[in-house]
Image: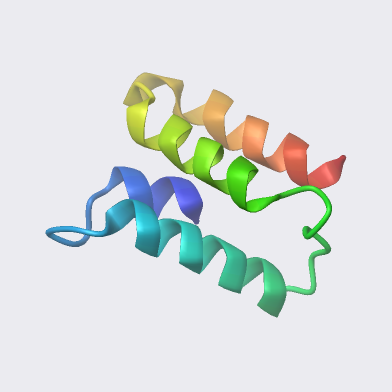
Length: 71
């Protein structure tokens, strides 16, 4: 979810903020424990990493986010 909202630019502005918020909201709704794994600073870094990443690296970025959640 984070990747697609940030990278696909569904809005004129606020894509990164909306993507980060949506990602946390989704994790809460899915009952995924993330509070110790994803600090506000980590969420900021992940969001910026997605925004700056090469679209050809999508699989690696998504894998990295999933790996972080599984730790």
